[in-house]
Length: 560
Image 1: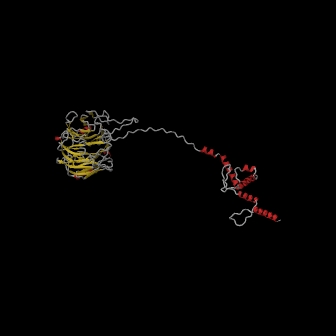
Image 2 (image 1 turned 30 degrees about the vertical axis):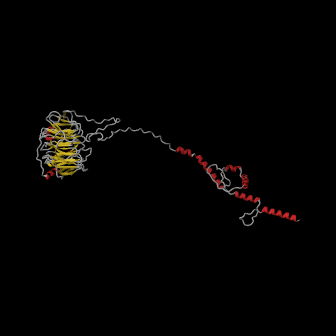
Image 3 (image 1 turned 90 degrees about the vertical axis):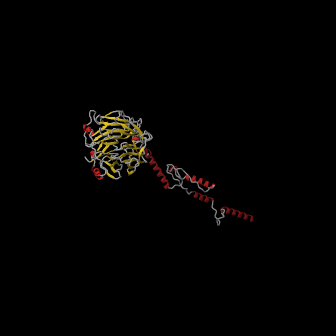
């Protein structure tokens, strides 16, 4: 009996152990053991929790699963397989075909949304938008290659200094072969006589008779006044200009100009940079508005002056020739020829038979017009560099003043040597080049100089000893540049102590100064619109001319 009771108690304990699950150390109280069926059901419910879906917009939805981070036991894997088999039985084949790419456990809304997406994609694909957009895209235009225009090759500008050419000489630029244009070549004038034929008249037309009468007219000698400045200022104020006083005589820049000494009419001469000589008579009807044009030289006419009886016009040029214009013989007679360009000259005698000519090389030649040929009587070197101006004393004609490179000296013709001649009187030293130097017209007791240091200087030359004292220095802008003739102060032949000079100010004007530096008068007009580098007073009449760089003469006079 006891044995049977003990066996039954052991059996009941085994049953209790099977029903009661092992307790966790962290749990309080006993937990009731569940059956295997209940545990499997719980696991199944846990598996029913759906993982997050990754919806796509393609027509076919790929099946993807999100891996669970927690570890899965072998029993759970077996339960999952049984669940998959049971779920397949709930769906028929028609549902799987209509809902391709569905995921397990999708709601009705999600299934409807996927269906709508598939329908939209099918509709868009039926529209063929890609093909339509490709057809509507504009094709790139085929650009035609433009033909290159052949541009004219212009001549290259070069430095005159590097070409060893003088600034005042006309520059002939070399033209490339592509242009097929050659620059105008200046024809050298033959030595000897040149016929006096105006180039602006027909061949069969001769010189006007009025010109011959004026040419041979004897000049009126007037006394030169030195003290009455008020009356002189009044005469200057009475001089004016109008439209008829602006005349184009030659083409391009005028380098020299002069009045004929005749008092009955205003006859003027002007020479330009091309060697042309123009004669102008105010109010005349012959020629082109009273203009006769000649070509005695091939290069710039640097200086000119009318001689007394017989009346001739003497011109010197950069082409190295000095010529005399003789209307009675109707020729340009050659007086002197040099290998260098001639810059300035003056008469050494009252009958104008002897000339003192200076060239660019610094030499001074004494030329006698009565001697046949084109040679000199004597030649003297003043400055080894250059010579810019030469002028003879009006009373003591053995003295002459020379504007050299950067100095002004007075020499005595009687003591000249071939080289290193002795200086009689010096007129200061200069920091820049000198443009001109002239004795006063009657007594020669004053010399006025113009320099590129922007100064006009007046010296007292009443005593030819040592260094001449400086009376006055006037500031006057002188930098004309390359395209204008340099300014020069010129004495008024009718007034011993007054001179005239052009001005570079924007308000164009011509100024008359007293030797003391006082500005006596300024010529201004609406007809004076350019810089007049060349200025000159008439020897007997109240008239003033101004020449510019375009070949025009502007004449101020008290009679119009």
